[in-house]
Length: 251
Image (cartoon, rainbow, N blue to C red):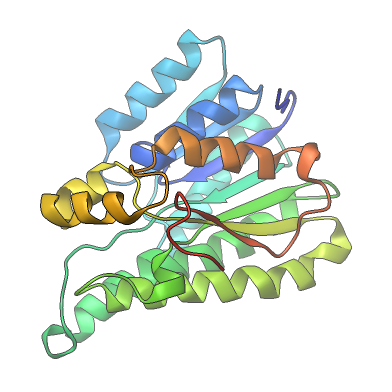
């Protein structure tokens, strides 16, 4: 059983879907959890309430992690609630926002996708790394799209996640000597609101049908992997981008 007792975790985009499952899983393992959100206040409160009902300790912090001033707010609230160090950082905030072809891109759409998915990862890590020490773990949420270019109309999303994948490798080399491990998780088709909003039912059925396990994944399954990477049980795993897609694609 994964044990994270006495550890402090920050989960960006931690209020719904995969982020919510991660927040709850880390709390069940004993971590104190900062649930970051931006638009999902109701879900954030529900997530904190669920954690507290389980006997855990959590706070919700509203912050747009694509903005440096909001990242500082997230850091300040974390320090205020849980002290001068954190042990686990999960960069989960992200989104597809819309499916657009090359000729449909404009600068504002480019900035939105790249800032939320990649800029947030870079500058949240920059802000929180000084609070992390020997045995700490950073887990970035990338995507199968970073491997295969994504589905139709998701080129910018896939590219932003590809940047997360490469940055993960780079940071594992830079931060490893400090005892901070950096890994990423690359989910495939996971049954969440993300695909409810942006993927047609017939495409989901086709992808599930060609997946060796013949189904979509679940958010809790991704959370289980994240919790393992956050724990001492994975203490020699560093710089990896780990696929979780039922065998549909390999690294």
